[in-house]
Amino acid sequence: MSLEKPTIVILDMDGTAVRHINPWVLPVLERLDDAYYMCAKFFGWFFRRRAKDPLLPPPEHIPPRRKPRLLVHRALHKVRRKEVDQIVEPCPGIYDVLDLLRAHDIPMAMISNGLGKGYGHDIMTKFDLEDYFGATVFREEVSKSKPSPEALLLALKRLNITPGEDDVIWYIGDRHKDVVAAQMLSDNIPAKAEPIAYGMNAAVAIIEKGFSPEHIIMSYYDMEARLEKMLGKAPDPTPESKKKVEPEKSGELAA
Image: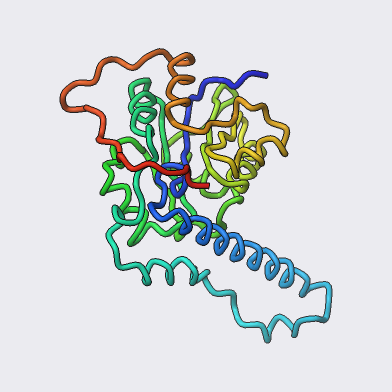
């Protein structure tokens, strides 16, 4: 089945909307985030056993659950001293895609497993992304990180959209967990949620999960061409809405 044109688009931030200037940074952050997720999953399972197994003391002796402290995320953001434009840059071609989607009145949201305070909100402001996105969701605003679909569901809520059976939601991400999150989103809404892999890591997940190669893009220039076939070309930009200047740096796409 061919990929259908989107009625709603949600983008991941790190590695998808922006890429790290130092290519080793993103894999480290993602591995730490994956480790955090696995540990949280294990301890969640462990504490659920307390009603069935005497491994834990009686409930009255167990302190109340604390709000997640997001220690890894907060430590990373405290360590950094550089401005966000010295750490990340917009992925090449992304403004062309965003301009095209906006010209066709496609609602867009940005989500991230990273913190908004001191990082995500700064990126949105520094690179003039705020005008494109009707909603943003960052790590401190949800109780579960991806691959949980919680952030995607909250993004739809903040867009004031109740997806129907005729809606097609593209979720663009660069990691295996982004593909899984899109699948889990489909289980929670009547609309069709389509994972779109940006880069090799997510592309492998697309093949593993049985999606067609149409769900894989390696550059936003390719995506712009595909979207133009689906939606039609955008009208010529006015002087006030000229495309942003793309970074001239070359390098590999972030994984």
